[in-house]
Every structure is written in C-alpha cells, then in structure tokens.
Image (tube, rainbow over all chains, first blue to last red; front, side):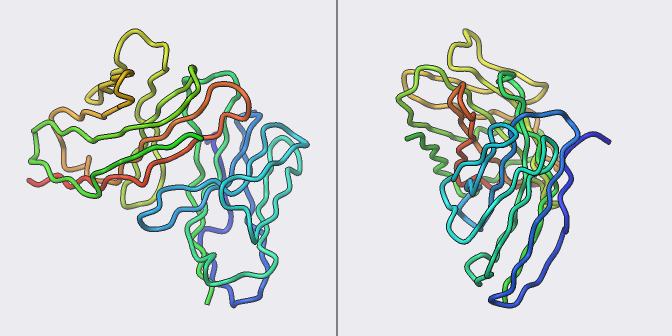
Length: 114
Length: 115
C-alpha cells in the first residue's frame, strides 16, 4: 500500500550508541519531516526537508542529523544516544502546494535509550 | 511564531453524544491552514479535517466538523454521535501556507467515550 514506511518499529539503545532511523515514502511527495512525540508535549519537529537536496532544522534538532538521500528517503541519525532521546519518532511527508491534504505519517518508531 | 493551544488534557463523553475539543492558535500570517489529527492507542496519526484561513464555510467530514472562529483564533473540533472507537488522542495543528509548510502541533486532548 502507498504510504510512509519507517524502520525499525522498536529499538533499545545504550547511552552513547548510534543508530539511524529510516523513512521512505512512495507518494511522490516533495517534503518530508521528522517529529518526536513525548507525553504531554505533542509532536515537535526535529528536522525537515522541503525538497530533495535540502534540509533544515526544526524546533528540537540538537543531537540529531538527517539525510535526504533522494526524493523517497529521509533518514534520521542519532550519533550518540542519550536517555533524553527516548521518545516515539514519526516520519511524515506532504505534497507542497496541495495545502488541503494533511501530512501522511509513518507508523512510528518507539526508541528507548537506557 | 506560530502556536497552538489545547487547554483540555482530557475529556469524557457518553456514547452517542456530541463533544467539542478546543483549539486556539496564534499566528501573524494571513494565510494558514488548520488540521485535526486522531491518534488511537495503536499509535498511528490519522488526518481528520482541514480548514483554510480563507475558507468561507466551516469544514465538515462525516461526523467531524470544525467550528472556525477566525476573529477569536479558534478552531474547535466537534464530533457528533460519539462512538467507542472515537476514544483517542486528538491533536490540533497549524501550518503557514507556502514555504516548507511545517506543521505545528498542540499538546493534544485525550478523549474517552463511555458506553
């Protein structure tokens, strides 16, 4: 089915370990986003990519890096994981200019840093 | 900067009754869009309804309607004839039209529908 695919769905890391969260969309959307969701905080934007080849910081970028590999793929990397990065991470995509359409979200990655 | 405020951490409603979830926003942009998303306990984010700042009429999608009061900067979600499956977190979000079209989310309201 068309949509946004995130991998992995669950991950446990030790403090200081690194990992990359993968995201791919097959909707031919231009824009892609990474959010984190923490209890009582809603969703906060980490990084986004308005189009292939561009990335920009969101509200909470510290401790993360991203790569827009091509139009389909947008990865999020934690270089040295910290317990404060324990969260649920969502990738999303949207089609610039089609404003009435909401984002399409992936199913999320639940990350625990111990 | 854009900001979304949802003042109700939790709401309860009886099955088959209507419920209103509050959302106020702050922006200086003249052109913007307002969204509501549902997040059931399974965790996925489900798009419910959209309202554009220049739309003349309030948006409706089935049992969902958006009570848009531009002068008051409010965009409340009304769910009619509540069902047990409506129990979920509900997020209000806003984005400036044009540019990167980033979505800014509120902190959410947890709705519980009682039988």
